[in-house]
Image (cartoon, rainbow, N blue to C red):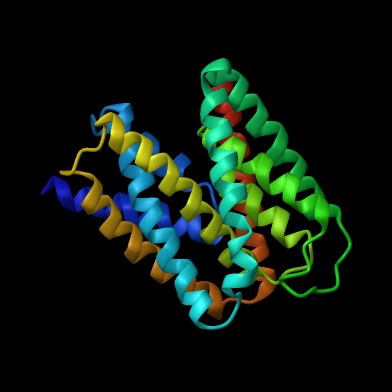
Amino acid sequence: MEFVLFIIVGAFTSFIGTLAGGGGLVGMPVLLLMGVPVHQAISAAKFSNTISSFSSFFVLFREGRIGWKQTLMLIPISLFGGITGGSLASALSEKTMTAIAIALLTFALSLQLFRKQMVQQRPAAFPKKLYFILYAISVYDGMFGPGQATLLMYTYLSTGMDYLTAVAFTRFQTFISCFGAFVTYLYAGHVNWHIAPFLATGSIIGAQISIRLAQKLKKQHLQIILNTVTALLIVQLIWKAVT
């Protein structure tokens, strides 16, 4: 019956991650508490996130939220950023990564709380400076930085996108970066196929429920969820840093 727990963990993690990011900070500790070795836990999470991210992105893509033209430019940014981050990972300690996460998430939350309401833009209207920011977040994700999807959400929302379009771009970029990370773990032999498929099954369920719920909620409610999850992530990271 342990496989049922993996499905539940995958569903809850993906549900939170799709709505507001940060699902890994919920699922990863649970997997470790269940006795899953850290490399197997990360590889299983990357496998499940690859599949669930694409599944939630595809729902919004099929509904016309974004098109392939807008997403194609994210592929080299995400892949190259992930490779760069993976190369830098060994140079930074876990405490340093946690401190970076706290600073970035606090900054993003502050901007979101105090910024003026922006006029909605077309999804394709990316400012040039956004490319570097997206690359930097992909580098951060390559180093297994916590809250990566949350940072992407804030970045896309800052351009004036509506919430669901920001979710679509975030899930696509997460799909690309997680796929790259999973391939490296697969090559290294860290994938446990007794865990990953069940976690992925739950992740698909959680992503589909989450994306459909997001379509029914008002913008104000979605914003409250994002800000609340971000605040909780910051508290969790601070607690982790001082204990």
